[in-house]
Image 1: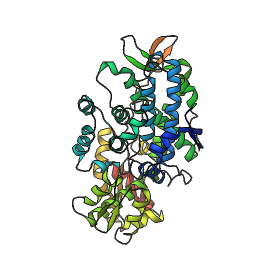
Image 2 (image 1 turned 90 degrees about the vertical axis):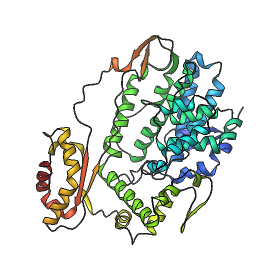
Image 3 (image 1 turned 180 degrees about the vertical axis):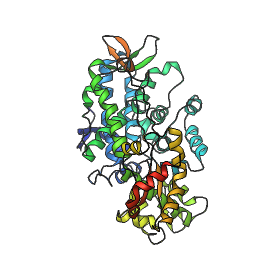
Image 4 (image 1 turned 90 degrees about the horizontal axis):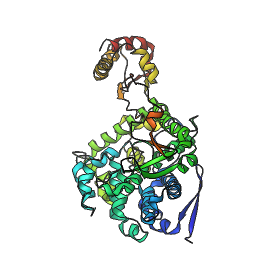
Amino acid sequence: MQANKLFRDPVHGYISIPIDFCVSFLDNKIFQRLRRIEQTSMRVLYPSAHHDRFSHSLGVFYLGQTAFKYLKENSPCLSSKSTLLEKSFQIACLLHDCAHSPFSHTFEKYYILNRNEEIKTRLINNISDKNFKDDFSSSLPSPHEIVSAIVAVENFRDKIAENGGDVNLIARMITGCLFSDSSKGVENCLISLLNGSAIDVDKLDYIIRDTWASGVNNVKIDEQRLLSSLLIRKDKDGVFKVFFKKHALNVIHNVVEGRNFLYEWVYSHHKVEYEQYLITSALSQLSKNKSENDDFLKELFSIDVLYENKKFGDFNFYLPSDGDIIYFLKNNVNEIPEIQELLSRDYLNKALWKTKAEYNHYLFEIDDVGRKKIYQRSFNKLKKILENRGIEGNPVVKEIKTKLITIKKDEIFIDIDGDEVSYTNLFPEKEDNISRFYFIPYIPKEAFRIKKEIIRELRKLK
């Protein structure tokens, strides 16, 4: 029997992880760094939502472990080669966020700042799978997924092999890079169960964990019922696909509703969005003050600072986390006004409208083209209104990118007494005629005495 270590998790209960995995992966400075990177940026809204990428990674491992257990019970196709696939899937679940940038997704774009092709080439050169380059070109991984895959294959390669995993497959699982080779149908199913477009164990954990941490009254998701329904089998065309048994239909619906609730009402909340503006603006200005061509940001958000200490001017970069970003900002509080505003939480600006419902109310008869014109012209108009009224301050106009999802055709399949049924055939989505384009103007508090006048002037910009 393999020895295991128990982790007490407030979301999933006890999580049992093999000691060998703990020694090889968890007890590593890069993985331990995740303890100091918050899972989300919503603490400005929910003060108790203090949970990190470390606990999320353990949660994804637990759900992946559980999913594979049920897949083996329900899927005869896994019996002959399940050990290699199981180890690879579990390790990929653990390492899927190992190189995540500080402050959740706020800064991950800087990983590829002026070096997108360089980063992709670095990953491709570390993969011995001859088809990976072509397959990777058609996938759309996020920057932190690419960098996490690089760290997995560079830093953990030997440990992956020692623990019975396939490093090439793990890189594909982390980045969601499917095989074009038709003989790899089972592997593609597992890739989609970690990094898929609809439902995967990564999304499942953050929906449940972020709901718990924030305390919001979101839908309840019965993850055990959902995962126990998983199976992999061939479809009518002989292609391996992931199926859910019919008893999980209500849980699938709740996963979609729960994820969309968080994106619409929590992650895109006007206070969360404004804080992201402040910290992004402050760090960008700090970089311009300290370097040319954003060299400061390139060094801070590089793969190499996860491996060794790098000196840049008066700064030392090593295993950067949320605290390091705050430290850099605090040391420049007198140079950059946004830092003072960020640290005090005494925001100078307030949202002109707080929700998409209000946005639709004020712009109800203006079409999508007109709304985008208003968005593009609103900053200059707001500046002019404030100047004419003698109101001090600078407005902010922020586009809100709410990543709502609907289940598309042929994304989720249900097994009903052996029949293959597309989820969308059972629950066809209603036509969505409401534009998802959305923006929020933030104006100085004093300007709220003329709020209706400001909205009238903005409406004329259509």
